[in-house]
Length: 127
Image (cartoon, rainbow, N blue to C red; front, side, top):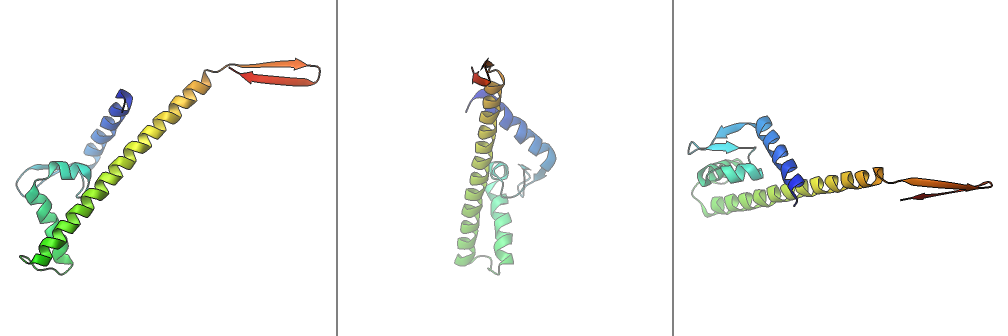
């Protein structure tokens, strides 16, 4: 990843922080981003993550303290982490592709087109 891509990612992430704001986790920590996002997983304590997914599993009908609850929480957390990572990677890839398209447009905009006409035929070349 080059410097321009990193700068762009930082700007996007800072913008996301301003839009999404911060919240407090169950341990009093500042938590950034929406639950389940890569930023949220990076800033939330284990207790906050467990509390969030425990509530999800309770809403599915699992009871606290059971093996099934623990399995549900682990599955939910693992699935959410994978999904957050996939979304983040996809966003980075999109940024890189956009940057490459901009580079191509810049290269194309600096090319010279020379046309030569012989009789009724015109031939043009791009340099």
